[in-house]
Length: 266
View 1 (cartoon, rainbow, N blue to C red):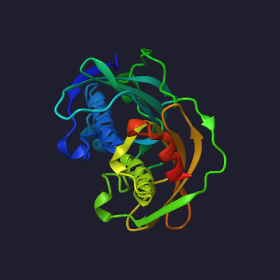
View 2 (view 1 turned 90 degrees about the vertical axis):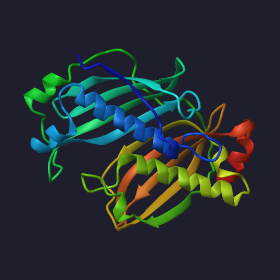
View 3 (view 1 turned 180 degrees about the horizontal axis):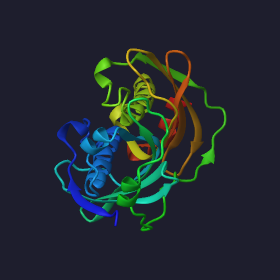
View 4 (view 1 turned 60 degrees about the vertical axis):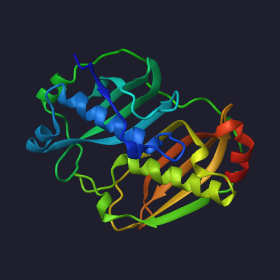
């Protein structure tokens, strides 16, 4: 059985000036949940290192149900819902807060060998450890109405050496940090407080890793509208122009400020 349950907490530094957890830090919590889920099935990180294999993120979709509150315990369940051909694995994670849903996610992982990160079929022992469970539907982005005419805007920076993870590239929650920073800068330029942004949902699809110290460019564009917010797409490009990842973020603004948010990012 691959179902594992435990309790997590968000650290103090995950929260912004209005005491709301950043989406990227919630993704770090979810990454920790995946590690605990794997460890609970007999596969801690040390075993992957010993067997010269790893899982790398292919795509992650998350829906936020409410605002995280610092200090609360977060009961969490995780299980493996698919493991196709010993290569592609979907992990479901559901986190609650005060008995109500906090965030739901579907993580799509790819099994690779270390250190060259080449695609390779998982061992029989690993596949047997992650028995498949069908406990809930995969997480999908909410439907939205198209909003044509959004003008692309860019945010560029040099990737830090200190951001490199154990596999030698930028860890996957950083990509979401970068997308949200792109939006924050537009809000600030429009005279809006960046921390008024509300997390609704997001999806990031990973193509290739960002490595230090290359130049990274985020190109963002308004593409849709929901009842509660706006939908933006983001292209994350490396220093040589290669496409490293694509993302879709759905964000709102406190106090029903969807019109102001739309105007800031259009």
